[in-house]
Amino acid sequence: MSITVTNISKSYKDVKALNNISFEVEEGELFGLIGPDGAGKTTLFRLLTTLLVADQGTATVAGWDVVNDYKSIRKSVGYMPGRFSLYQDLTVEENLNFFATIFGTTIEENYELIKDIYVQIEPFKNRRAGALSGGMKQKLALSCALIHKPKVLFLDEPTTGVDPVSRKEFWEMLKRLKEKGITILVSTPYMDEAALCDRIALIQEGRILEIDSPQAIVKHYPKPIFNVSGGNMYQLIALLNSYTHRHSVYPFGEFVHYTDQRAEFDPEMLHSYLSENGLANIHIAPTTPTIEDTFMELAR
Amino acid sequence: MIKKNKVISVNGLTKMFGDFTAVNQISFEVEQGEIFGFLGANGAGKTTAMKMLIGISTPTSGQAEVAGFDVFTQAEDIKKNIGYMSQKFALYDDLTVKENITFFGGIYGLSRKQIKTKTTTLTEELGLSEVANQLVGSLPLGWKQKLAFSATMLHNPKIVFLDEPTGGVDPITRRQFWEMIYKAAHNGTTIFVTTHYMDEAEYCDRVSIMVNGKIEALDTPKKLKQQFETDTMNDVFLKLARG
Image 1 (spheres, helix red, strand yellow):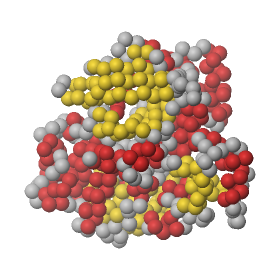
Image 2: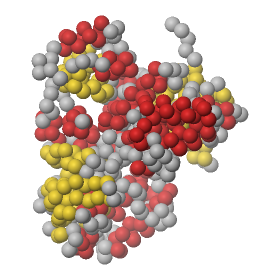
Image 3: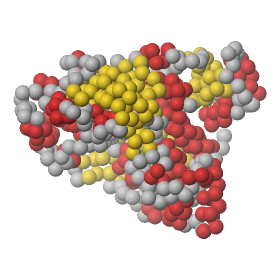
Image 4: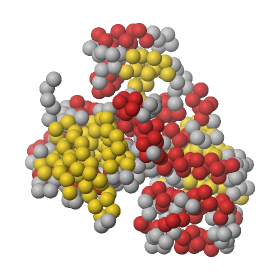
């Protein structure tokens, strides 16, 4: 096991940031922590990177205990915090050199590992980090986190606020790193990114709701789910929300995802209800649940 | 069909920083009550364009009217007639819910009496009555975002500009936030919104996509998907921005 977390709890005053959390990550696995702001993701990262000590429980990273062997852990993990934490006044190349030196290595020694990523920012190697665009900062931060060839890579919300194109590129980079045998623990509030992980933990308010592969998590969704469209979105949501038999009503792009309380649900009945209330162009069709559906169902 | 009011009209609007053209001759119109999605990659020029529309950055050239006022000569009138919610800052963490409402009400020129009424109705509507005297900093992000949106609407603005209002918010709250947007639009407020969630792009009446300072696509989500022969706005975005 590359990471083990056993019954970890951490509180800040009255707030339980992490509440008895346990999970394991295998070597070479791309493991996702999926949850909104305030779920406890950053606290968990800080515990595992030995920057914070838990109130209860134990954890190991790359075989070392996070409390007793913290020095060994620091040498062998890469950490990219959620907030951009490089030196804004140093250039791209100076930042990379700095981190290489700190870890007793050189850019040349591990260039192969960062090459794919670094070539994209190399044309700007003399620019100060503070003057880079969001996407380039992210690539530099990842290069710096990788320069000492870590066994485990911790990425705390690397794609928050990043546009869909850069997000897609970033995940392609992660896949290539994984193929090189690096264990990756990554957190994200974007549910669509969850599908790109080997396994995910859905986390909310300091608790893990479920851990499994994205495919399995979606299969556990307990109810038939339907795409509903018709009329304007505002009216449609209002009508569905006041339908007596509704279980859940969530807008999803151009449709509303609807589930019913009844075991025997006949879409025709919902159709008549909506048309009696003046909606036109009503369509109701079964659809497959997504990770986001599952998350919302578990978080209810 | 009734001819709708144009509340934003932009023609050849351009902003240059030295030699760099951040916004390159963009033109579009937004109707009253419309939910207008303003999309683009990081660095495409969205924020610069939005800053010109809300009257805090003077364009280099072109024309734009917002809520009936000219961006060059009537920037102060624009500010009074719009609401703006930024992704970074929306409320004071060190003030209570009530104090924030009072503060923003005062800024927007509401009377004491109006502020008092608004405080009661708002906190009740948002289910925040019990925490009205708590510091905003102690509230979950989702509650803050809903309160921030309401604060932006305190002076019944004609147009509300929302800059990535739902980043990092949990999926349920994100949807509740959009229900508030639908409601406001239904009541005639125009919504101008940026987002990186492509499913939210689908919630907009029309969507524009900026690439390198220019608007490269502008239509309803349905027509954009037809035009680019894809099933999702995410694919539309990827095709456009990657060329």
